[in-house]
Every structure is written in C-alpha cells, then in structure tokens.
Length: 147
Image (tube, rainbow, N blue to C red):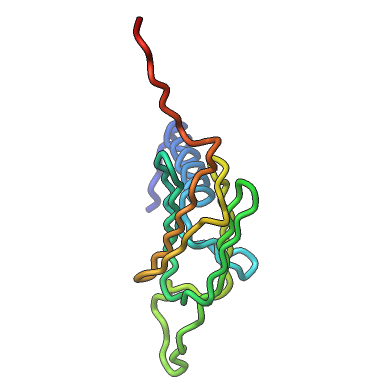
C-alpha cells in the first residue's frame, strides 16, 4: 500500500526559506570554517571606548609565539598557526571538531588608530589587542559659555 502526500506549495516555500537562512548563517555567522586548508578563525569580539578600540580573539591551542598581529591603516590582520595534537591512529573517531593549521583573520577597524602604541595580551586562549585611537578622531568636549 502506498501513502499519498498532498502537495502544499507553502511547505515548499518554507523549505526554500530554511535553505536561504542556512546559507546566510553559514556564510556570515559561523567563525569556524575550512577554506582551501585554511581556517577562518579566530572568532572575534570588537568594541570601542572614547580612547581605544579593543579586539578579543579566541585562539585556543595557539601559543603567543605562533600568532602575528599587523595593523595597516584601518585594517587589523591576525594570523598564526595552531599545531595539531597527536592523532590516535588505532582508534576510529566518531566526532572530530578541534581545528588546527594556519589561520588568518582580517578586520576593518572603525577608525584610525596609533599602531605604534598598540598592546597585545594573551591569556587562557584569548588574545586581547588594545589599539589607541588617533588623537584627531577622539571625541572632544566643548565647554559652553553663558552670557
């Protein structure tokens, strides 16, 4: 006996919508993807205060010596390498999500910075880069005189 399923065009449209949502989710919001053997990590948080821009990058498994930071104009580049842990040859992996290899992340900075005074700290797999804003882009307070 065969089961007949009624065709509903609205259900097909939802499937297309779900596919488009998945496409945009994969393209723009997931930081851990492999492209041609390179990882597009690290996942990054960036915020700014009145005086500086702070970038926090998650690079678990990396050593501070294996990470390079460059600032050119309004572009920050973080690149490095995460070494592979020793693979167990005689076991069959059921799940393998840890990443290793070369990574590079380019981030457009929201304003000019003073690259010579930048600071970088590495603690517990989190790289924190503090970039002081250029003097001409810092907010200035103007006092109002009354008459």
